[in-house]
Image 1 (cartoon, rainbow, N blue to C red):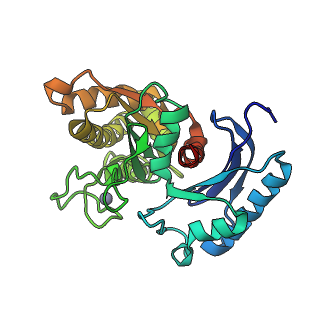
Image 2 (cartoon, helix red, strand yellow):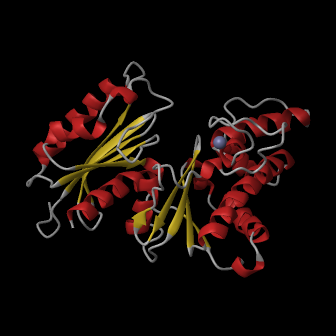
Length: 315
Ligand SMILES: [Zn+2]
């Protein structure tokens, strides 16, 4: 361990299928860390206890104890710190903050993974040069976070920046239904799941054979080769995402929008057409102003954002 940068923070990141924990220094350096895949038999409480043990194991490796905990959770977190999970049973019964405090005897700060992904990118990643950005995480679903003046903007009820549920075609009965209860959201048109579903539909309509395990990565690769079915599928997703990005820019006039998550790993095959469409969707006064960037921290945006949140509370 580097004596000039002690690992002041123990950070956790609970996703739907994986969780991470790690010791983090104030400059964002990630020290010893663990990643675990959730056994399917684990409910929320069992999964939490397993990760607490991983955290205890990390502390044994650490020369000096951390000063605080930062926790990222892959579901809504209200302003009282209550958590909700649509994917893993049992989380709702847990007072996550209190359980963590009991386990480690340290101050604990909890927020949603997309909010913290944005904070992580702003502090240590693709948005280091600005204090204001919007973050979209595009993977199975579409999450969002708004960082304003270097802080996560949580809104009145803790559910600000739900960019995945910006309405693109809410009144179109033909638009796909969304998990949030309406239809035609950014998420139901541009998430990894939505792209796979649309690709299947477009291929069937074109009389092409079904592809086993067809996912967004294959769609972008095929679009790069100029295949018509993939270009059409990509255009639907890009239009929805551009609508979302432009809507956020219209509200907040931000200098930077960062996109992370598995779908954003398509790189220029996504960002190229997206930048063009965002410009089209913006009023003239906002065109050419914001930069749209790929996330720089990979799978660690939220973990490092959780650490940044805990550090801010110590300062
Ligand atoms: Zn929705």
